Structures are given as structure tokens and as C-alpha cells.
Amino acid sequence: MFTNNFSSVTIGWVAIATGIVGLLGLTFIILFFTIGQPFGTLNDICIGLTAILSMVIVWMLYPGHHAPFPLLSQVALVIAMFGALLVLVGTALAISGIKGWFLSGLYMAAGNAMIGLWLLGLNYFALRDNSLPHSLVIFGLICGVILALGLVTIPGIVRGIDSQEYELTTFNYIWWASSLGYLALYPTWCILLGRFLLLK
Image (cartoon, rainbow, N blue to C red; front, side, top):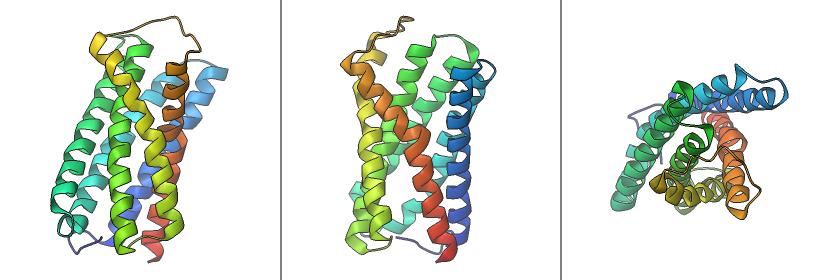
């Protein structure tokens, strides 16, 4: 999966940085629910930074699986980049206050769902060529599936739903499950990936 375009050490440190920023966002959202602002805004900033770092990881890993899987790798690249941009739109809407937390969160979930589709593809490639440890691949596939649950938010984005009243509907359960993916599981996978690459 890996080529000489970027060293394993470089990719590893970027992956670890991505995971640390993501888990910092998780810490901030917990503090937001227990204390309040400014931790909500800090969480949004971390989610945006994680998306930017994810774009870097996607770009760095792309050459390694382009040759054996040219079409699938190109599709995965485009989907992940578009997903990261959606996350940035969501964080910008939340931080600026242009839209409410609900619609902003839909953008973040949908964008991270697309990153999740890339993660599924990446781990599928790794499963085929044995370039990553089997346990890391399985965890990556689980993370990808949970992230991809955020695709259910796309109709809400299209309709511009920005409800300020939260209800425990099936939709919201799925949405929050996908949030667990980008707040906790995906950052953890990134750290594990980085650790593997540094020790490789």
C-alpha cells in the first residue's frame, strides 16, 4: 500500500496527529455538555482540523493503492476529499453561528460518512494485499461502517432542516452512532495506524 512518495514515518506522524486532534475534540464535547462554552466551539474547531488532516492522510496514502486498484482508488479519493470539505462547511456554519447546531451537525456527519467510505475502501485494499495488520483492518472496517451511518443525514441537508428541538428518533440514534465514529473510533484507528507505521 505504501510507496516512496511519502515515508511511513511521515504518514505515521500525520495519522497520530489526526487521532490526537480528533480525541481532543471528544474531550471538548464532553466538557461542553458538562460545563458549556467555549468547549463546543473548541470541539467544532477540532472536528474541522481532523477533516483537514484526514485530507492529508488520504492524499499521502493514495499513490500506494492507486496502481493495484486505479478506478476504486480514484473514486475513494474524490469521495473522501468531498467529505472533508462538507465537514469544513459544517464546522464553519457552527462556529460562525450562520446556522444552528443541528444543520451544522448534519454536514459534519455526512462529510465524515464519506471519509468513512474511503476508510472502508482503504481497509478493503489492505485486506487484499496484507499491507496492514489484520486486527487493524478489521477495526478500520468497523469504524468505516459506523462513520458511513452518517449518510442518513443527507436528506436533512438537502431540505435544510435546522431544528432546535432534539427528539430521540431513530434518525437521531443513527446520527449519534455515526458521531461516535468520528469523535472516538476513527481518531483511535488513526493513532493505531500511525503507531504501526512508526514501528514498521
